[in-house]
Each structure stands twice: as C-alpha cells, then as structure tokens.
Image (cartoon, rainbow, N blue to C red; front, top):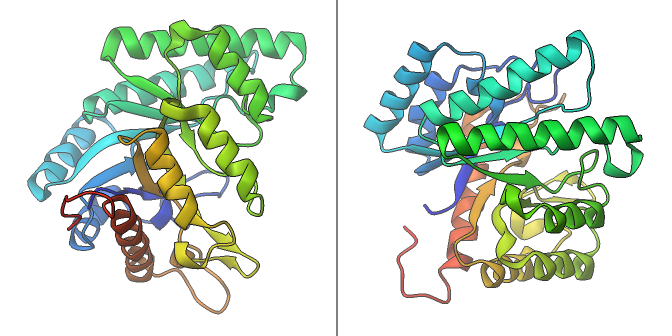
Length: 284
C-alpha cells in the first residue's frame, strides 16, 4: 500500500500523561506488515526512549519484514525556561538522532505547544530561536527534512499565523503535514489545501462524525473531495492513517489491536483506491 500507518493509530495510551506504549514496537511490526502496510510514520514515544542498540534491532527487524520508516513524529516544546527547558531540549534533540538512526527522511512535528496568537514576546522569542536551532541541527547533522502539523495549540493556531511564518522564514525549508482544522467546513478545508499547494508533503487522516471516530467513507468531511485536492496540490504527498475507531478503547469495546489494524487497513485501501483512480498504477 502507498498509504502509511501512523503507529499512534494503534496506540491506546497515546494521550496518557507519561505516554508509555501499551505494546512495544517490536511486537507491532509483524502484525502491521500482515495487515498490508509497507510504510510507517512512527509515534515519538514508540522509539524516543529506546537505546541505540534497541533502535538498531527495530530497524533491522523492520527491514527483514519489508517495512520502512520514513517519518518520525515529534512534539518539541520550545518556550520553557529553567530546568524544564533543559529536559525539553534533551528530548527534542534525541528525537532527531533517533530518526536518523532509523533511516527516516522526515520529521513531522508540532511547532511548539502554545498557540501562536497566545504567546507573549518572550515565549515567541524562545520558540523562534530554538526552532531555528533545532531544525538547523536536523538539516546539518542528519539531512532531515521537517513538516509542521496543522494543529491547534501550535504556531499554526491560527493557520494564517503559521503560514506567514513559513513565508518569512524560507531558510527553514519548512513544509506542512496537512490535517483538517474543522470537521464541518469543507470549503475552508479545500481553501487551505489550495493555498498550501506543494508545501503539503504529508497528510493525516483522522475521520470523525457526530458519533465519534469513524472510517473515512463515513466522515462528516467529504474525503472524496479532499483526497483529489491533496493529490492535485502535491502528487507526491504522503498519506497517513492517524486515527481509526478501533484504535480507541471504550467501556463497551476494549482496545483490540486486530480491530485497530483492520480499520486502518480498510481506510488505507480506500485512500489508495482514490489516489490511483486517475492513474494506471496498481495500488495493491
């Protein structure tokens, strides 16, 4: 499949305080491959706390299975001061070293953990200077490229703030991981996609409707229009399944890895079929 699996999709502990994975990534690789996936976007906490030998073992095991890991997600926090800043710095630079060791080419990241419009001058100074230094390190030391996730509570909140930052800082070579801001405003969604154009290198699919998480065909936003718009903006963009209904535990239905992977594979095939609809390529 062309469409990637973001490993956060099959992680029920994604939003817990300590972000300790329910299953080790080594236990997930074979089931992921059996579900039909060939490409992974790695959730930071599936890899960032591992030693280099552990990471090398993951890289080698994935290679044997025919899985590659071109994208690693990261959640840097740029605005802290004091001891918190030291800890945040160690963590965010470690993620870059981990991504390089695993053979990733892209770091998909939250551009800070504060909304752009809420930062005071000091917080903005720290965010701007530290982001430049962090991205420069990734470029210089590892040849990594960076795409910022369109997400609330980051520099891209609001969208226009982050877009202006991209245009005034071309030296960062910053690209975007698209995802929808609103679940009910298709015209606005398509407008943002057109505005970003080839700056969209990655896209997260996280469908929902009035009943909660759902599969892509049932989403409130019409992905039958969104996927062709993304493909028109950048034919080489990376589609990635981020959330699926089976990836969330409920009182009525505890988490099931098999169900989460089945949902993710169904959505990935649905995306692939639309991406290949206008080509002669085989999506299998």
